[in-house]
Image (cartoon, rainbow, N blue to C red):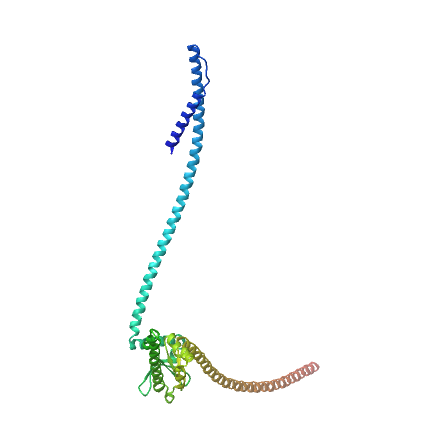
Length: 360
């Protein structure tokens, strides 16, 4: 940039010299000295003009260079800011890409875990064990430990997953997890397959209902005339109770009620247990109230005995008061007699003294 400006300045200077040379005044020939003097004057004038032009050129070049420098600095700062912003944006993008990569890994791991869980749940025994574990955990959260028993065995040698103890009866609760045909039903590719698997699923549920009704509802062994079928999955419970009732296909819920079996999910069982827990608290309060009444009866007997002793004490105090009054009267009589004897003795002494005085 500086070299270009210098070349431009030299070209301008040459143009000024050529222009002044062409515009110089035409003088007639003179003597050599006059010509020499005139040439010196012209050269001096030309030098002065060149100095002025160079000074003006330097000032213009300095101003132009300052302006160009400011513009370059401004553009550099702007470019630097943009580069910083771009660097921050790139950093944020890289960070977000890293987080997205981590999230993708977690989703992949979660998918693998879900796949493994589905593989585990494919085994009926493992599903049953999981249902029993969830049932026990829910009972522990709501009820006192002495109001439920896990794996309660009846006289027919059948063991129900749990029984809830109330005041005089038991509520049998058995966990059922009909997952296999339910999964086939919801993943069926066409309506015909879905209907077929739905019938199989309904048949499985009815078998579970019949098993609970025949094995665990035993009023002669202290159970209520109904039982609970605990379904650990809300979507299966929805299929059995709500969706089935709405479609009226098979009427599983009504079938269960006719067999005195009440299907419950984790949420609905929690609500039932809360009601039972409130009833148990009421029973505990009632038992405590009986204890309080018995204690008040014992206190009444203690009060009667204290009143009897207090009455005897009052009688003793009354007798003592009477004895005190009697003794007080006797003491007053004794004091009167004593005063009388004292006065009589004093009178006799005075009479004896007077008689002796006369004899003398």
